[in-house]
Image (cartoon, rainbow over all chains, first blue to last red; front, side, top):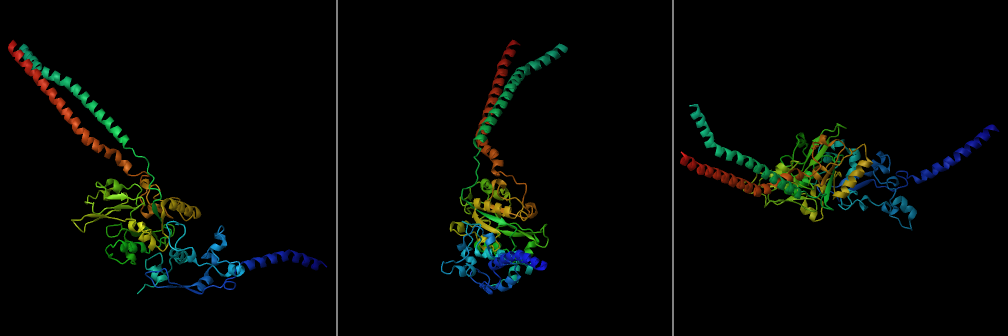
Length: 155
Length: 332
């Protein structure tokens, strides 16, 4: 009798917790499963003196602590509307929320003197690279760091 | 003997007395006259300097500026390269990806309008700090004040530009600049010219970014309206209090500069002059300089009047002696 009463109490206590955990898990995108992510991204439209950069997105996903380390997430975009980051339509709302993110270049275009707080695409991308890559391959130590780390000069 | 002697002496004093008397009497008046005229001149100058007191100038409204964030600079020297290409400057002795240039602290010159220097990072010795140096485009430029032929212009857009054709090579601006920026080209003896960063004024006019800002990959250079940049700089400081020192260099230095700087270490450690006055340098000199025309116009007149007065006195004295002399002779 006693153990079963204890069990019941335990179930009553744990069940709501369990439900909450399931809800949170459903809301949190599990990397590589619920999102369709690019594996390799070729950045070939902003560089002038270097050849196109092959960015191994998948490798960075496995190293990063989460999407938020590089991408804007809900936490740092509290006042943003959904449409600033998602391509939403009423027809495919659910699918769109999870799948179709706008590219960085939707907002980060060029450095504009009218909105100095929004960096252009080149700066926005490099800033993120530099956050982790400083000191690796002489980046930040020598001007040759650019070539040693990522870039290949145009021939 | 004694009488004669005394008489002689008396005679001597008598002889001298009219001149002496007139001398002392005119000496007093001369002194009075001198002091009075000096007072008058000073009063005049005082009034003139007051008349030259300028209203405070906070810079052109909506002028552009550049925010340089040394926390973001990675020392890639892209800005140097872009500046060199944009201004068609001579090719550097060492290529732009050579880090040996960092071994010495350089200064902008007629061959490089902007340069990047490397400094030791006291916070993190493994990550050196970089400082870009170029013209700061002061809101009230000392170079423009010093230039005797107005070859310099502070444009409403914020750029301090200069007219090569007007420059005759006096190099006053080189001496006047508190940041040692203008470089003097010795390449041509017949066409001397001062050369310095123009803030890419032609590009700004075409609604383009200055070449260095466009080339910068790290976000260390942000081009925009100066007023917006100050707000942006404050926000960066507020959001990362441990990362930045709470100071925007250039906001008030020498009356404010169009280029503004943020740093994680005290600015002196990056070779910035920390003791610059907060007021425009023109305020240190304008009082004196405004006296120059006054002195040139009034002083010759004052001295001419003094000379005429003393000459008149002397003539009068001589006349008196001459008038007295025949009388004494007639008595004898």
